[in-house]
Image 1 (spheres, rainbow, N blue to C red):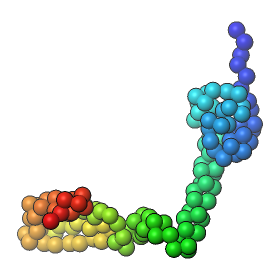
Image 2 (cartoon, one colour; image 1 turned 180 degrees about the vertical axis):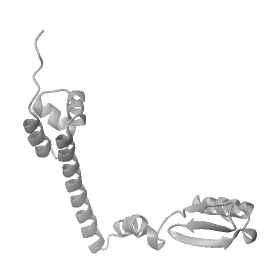
Image 3 (cartoon, helix red, strand yellow; image 1 turned 135 degrees about the vertical axis):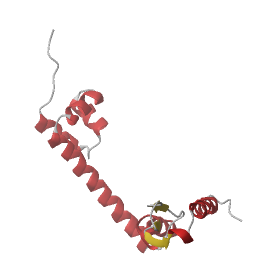
Length: 144
């Protein structure tokens, strides 16, 4: 039984860099199965880093392109940016409501990233559930 050819880690790293982190393309260029390459990568932190760096580079390019579209007054790009990056300022299609510590004298909940506190006696669990249900309904377009 002959041992299968496996390229060196240095060669794999170079091919992964050249293929911008696309494992399928790298495997084809190396002449090995994609599953084999994934196993090699999984067991090698250096190769994982190569893929991470390649993906971060692509993300930088995508962000740069998005910024170009924003500067060119592309409304879709502007809206996307506001819904994602501007979410903490209230630009969102949905409202996140989380409730903490219902068993204390003060109930703390967050609407988006904004913390709000109320006396537990003044704000019942049923009211919070109704508020959450109402908010979900209005976000799904089923509001009044």
